[in-house]
Structures are given as structure tokens and as C-alpha cells.
Image (cartoon, rainbow, N blue to C red; front, side, top):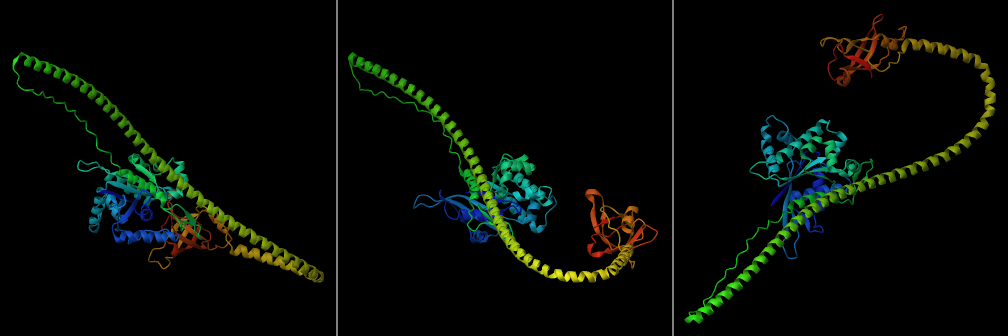
Length: 537
């Protein structure tokens, strides 16, 4: 039986896709197709994951899923009373990410405890007649191949395809497809790129350059999503995994084997026999026999000529029919390609429709929220107007009291002015003595000395400030006291700069550019060294 294998690194979307595929084909569809689980684990896997999705949660792969083999048999119902036809085996044998890395990326020898798993993974890929390789669209579009994890995953995918499609004399090269998951979230991107292959060329050029001749499908496991309480898209309770029909159609196309070539048959020539009418004596008998023989030969010649003409006409007709049959087969193959393209286009349109529906539901939710806010603001406005009217009445009652107090205020006005002037003078003196200047952005100096590790003062260091930075800190006359600014300690320049830790300014050595600072141990990433740059936090 033909084997269809599904592989993909961690995070590629196998968990959701397999659950949706198993649920979609639990019961026979309109063509009688259904997936029959081969074991209890496969059946419970689908039911548990789908139940979680019906509750509005995206299932994630757990430790129990790793190394769990999921196996189905794709079957088709026949006429009533007949046994269902088994079409192919569909399976997914998952492995931990470390097994994929050692099997297809890393060059060093793997740990001994992974050797059997690596061998099983490679045998699983090699034994497949049809191979489905999953790639998560969100990873390559949002994070991009500059992300180390995404780049590693893409190289693993590239290596899996290279290993699976390696042409050897003793094996048949499998049929393969690259499947882009989470297509419902990126329908606009898929459309702008001209379809799934365009997405592959734009975001995964290394894979597209080597395998653009493979089928590329864009699928999603749900046809409808809703917003949860946190504003995240989750599966709707009544969702259906119908977008996965695109993948099933691809599997079915691989089962359509061409019919046997019709061999050319050689027309057998008729054998003729002349019956002897018996022995006759005399000349009349001989003449009669010769005449009959001549007539028979003439009739046989005419019949042979007619048979030859008919055979020639049959050969020409057969050649013409064979040419028409070849043209019809080519037309059928072209129509199949068109149907496949239309199916992919329908899938993309369904994804776009679901995306628009999600955006519409989000807009409706935002509109309802805005209406609630407007209603609350209107109620608040009415309350404020009532409070204003009450306040106006209170003001009228207080005007008389104000008139009484004005006279009293005049008597203390001079004392108040004197007190204000005195307070202003004291504040200026206090500001000059205790407040440091505000530091602008940029490098302000560098570490001049760091105590040895055995020093009792190892929590402090000395920073040499630039003149301009010291003026900002102490004022041009350098009469201000140092305030406990917290500053970053940076090592390196430009793109290679990194924060080592933080310090807090403590004291200034008068007459110099040196400032004593306390090392904030909670922020320390590496030991601070002489020459490290300091800048405001």
C-alpha cells in the first residue's frame, strides 16, 4: 500500500493540522473518503485536540506527543454490501528537535542515546511514497530567516527534502509537496506574492531555488476564528477544518496512476484451405477441378485484397484514434493542472474570506466598545453639569466670606511677600548645594579604575568624566553637589555595543574629573573593566 508521510520541525503546525485532518475525515465525505485510525492513540489524539479547539484554545505539542506515531488508512466506501477500498496509509512519526538537528544539520557525531531515533527518522523519510513537509508561515514572515531558530528550521527542511529526493538506482524518488501552515492569518501576503510559490520565493529563497518544481500548498486548520477576551484570534466553537481539503486533494492526485500502455497487436493473416472434392477420372473431371480451383483462387484473391484494404483502413483509423487518445490524455493532464490551480485559488479565497470575517468581527467589537465609552462619557457629562450648578451656588455663598477675608489678607500681604522672598532665597541656596544637573544622552566618560577583587571597596569604582559632562553634572562653576544618577556601563561600539551593568554616582573628587560610583550588583552582567564607557540610563 502506498505510504504518505508528514514531517516538519517543532512549531511547524503538525499538531493542529493532524487534528483537523483527522476530524475532517472522521466520517465519509461526499466521495466516500474517510480516515480510519490504526490504533487507539491516533483516535484519542484527534478527539482530545479537537475538543480543546472547540473550547477556543490552540493546542500545543507536549512532551507526550514527541515520538508518538499517528497512523491512518485512507479508505473509500464502495457499493452497498462491498468492503471499503483501502487507498493509502497516512502517518506522522514525530521526533524531538534535537533528533532533527543531528540527523540533517549538525556534522558532529550524535549522542549514543539518539542513534536509534535518528535512524528511525531517516528510514521513515526514505520509505515514503508521498512526502508532505510542513513550514510555519508565521515564523518565516514575522521572525524572518535572520532569527537563529527559524534559520535552523529552514535548513533542516531543506536537508529533509534533499535527503528524501536523492536519486538512487535502488529506489524510486517520492512525490513531495511543501505545505505552508497558518495561511488564514496571512491571506493578504499570499495574494500579494502571487500565491504559495511566490511566498516561498520571497521568504525562503534557498528552499525555492532548489525545489520550486515541487507542489507548494497553503493551508489552515480552521475556517473561522473569533476574538477572545484578550483580543487574540482563536478557533470559533463551530469551526470546520475544511481548508485542509486542499491537502487531501493533493494526496488523491498521487493515487491516480496512468493506465497501462496499449500494446500494438499484429493482425493475423487468414489461412486458406482448399478442399479436394475427391478423385475424378477423365478430362472433364480435370477441367472441372481446374475451373473450380481457378474460381476459388479468384474468390480468395478478391477476399484477400478486400481484407488487406480493410486492414489498412483499420490501421489508419487505429493510428488516428491513438493520436486523438494521446491528445485527450494531454488535455486531461492539463485540465488536472488547471483544477489543482483552481483548488489552490479557492483555498486562498476561503482564507481571505475568513480573514475579512475576522476583521469585520473585530471592527464590530471595537464599535460596540466605542458606543459604551460614548454612553459613559455622556453620563459623566450630565453628572459634571449637575456638580457645576451646585458649585455655582456655593460660590455665590462664599463671595461674602471672600469680601470679609480680603481685608484680613491685606494686613498680612507684606509679611507674605517677605516670607516668599526668604523662601526663594533659601530654595536657590539649597538647589545650588544639593541638586546636580540633568545629563543629556550620549557617552559621558569611561571607567578609570576598578578595585581588585580582594579590596574591601570592591563595590565602588572611579569614572573619568568628560569636561562637558562634568559641567552638566556640577554646573559651569562646578559648585553643585553630585546627585545619585544611575548610569549604564557599555562595552563595544556601534552594533557590537552591549550593556555590562549599572552604577550609581556618589562623590566628586574636587579639582579633578574623577567621580566615585557604586556598582549596582543586581544589574551586573560581566566584570567591569577599565576603559568601559558610561552613559545615562
